[in-house]
Image (cartoon, rainbow, N blue to C red; front, top):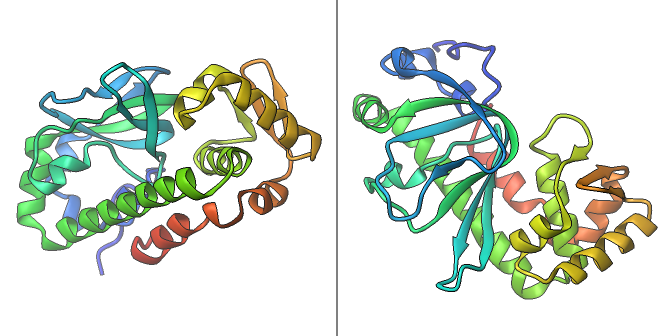
Length: 236
């Protein structure tokens, strides 16, 4: 079996693919920085590059005609942006924006498509990743319809914590309200409840995770299933 290419990569999806399967892509790997609010994919605009996240978080959001946003899934070092191109599409109605600063490996879409044509196993691995994104999106919809704001906020914090180094989430109340599709006062109330239970410490533009076990209990069944599905279908 071929050894994984570049074991120093932090991206779990890249690390799970053999050197043989990525050989044609190696020349196209471009390390780039990710800065907060950088837009990596614009809605209804041709996708020219995909980004394999090494550090940081990318939020993928949908937007109403009036401009209100809701996060539908998030990407960290387990994944990549631009999954529409894996399905032979070149546009998406969704926007991908950097939530937490970091870095990524950028790859031109034509190079990725050529590599997928040359390697059935690479294509299969990337399509399995697409499956995990669909599961995450379904779980987000389930949480929106059947869980409380406190539970949804706990889930959001856990999923962000999974994708960062350390325990500090640099986010504002306003940003959380946008991502969860609620009013800012509701976020402030829920943060106060989670803080009162010793799960987090809410500071100015910073949430410090203190107790994951309590957050998991608060999130209930809204957290864990898409994480387990990723572990099942992506060997890394």
